[in-house]
Image (tube, rainbow, N blue to C red; front, side, top):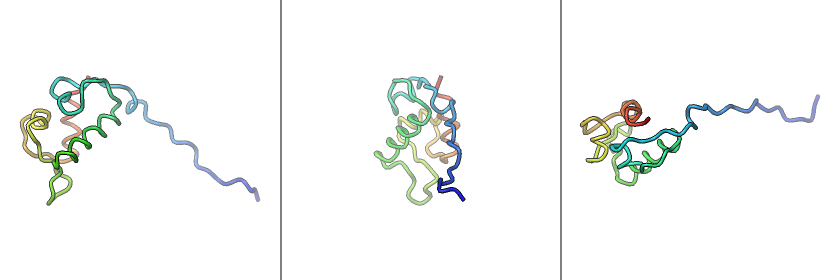
Amino acid sequence: MSDQPTSKPARKANPALSKPVQPDEVLAKVVGSEPLSRGELTKKLWDYIKANGLQDQAKKTNINADEALKAVFGGKSQVTMFEMTKLVNQHVK
């Protein structure tokens, strides 16, 4: 028996998540115009949603859009978290 603790192999980060993406003008109003990794983009988006109280209180998986997010969401006033990811991806290069 070995005294060495068994450890899982280190998980490799997904390179697509760390590669910087450029927000377009519409998304830049929410997260800023600097290139961000997808992880940072998601964090900034959630910071914005929380700071502005846009997460639906009755159904937490829904996001209520203010004017800036409505432009990102293609004019929709409410989207699900999963739909939001797809819509946000249309605004990055």
